[in-house]
Length: 104
Image 1 (cartoon, rainbow, N blue to C red):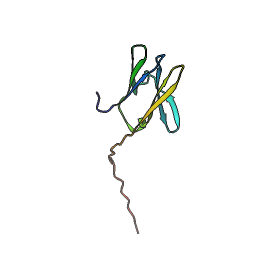
Image 2: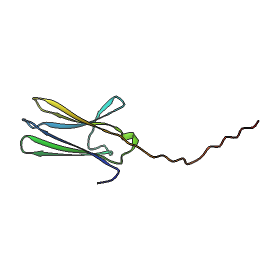
Image 3: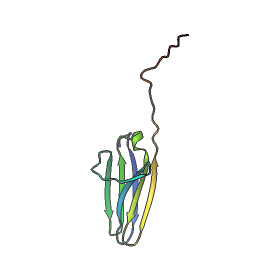
Image 4: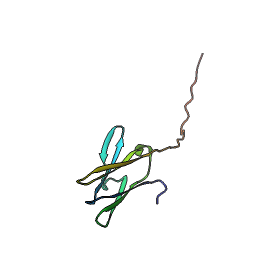
């Protein structure tokens, strides 16, 4: 696993087997995550006729990707969610120091 990535896992069981969707909530905006977005990889696996598991990988973690990631699970009987927040602490470097000159 890339040390600059974060992985979220979700496991759900139901009858009929639930459908799983990943959602990102950032700055009060909600967006469904699809695997064709370059910042994310999604793996979904079905087990038997009741269980589905999924992992969401956030690639190249950076402050712009800090958000709440939600696993939305639904079937005709019920909907449920589980959420986790990705908090990114970054280091910064001063590349050019400003100097002030005061003439009296």
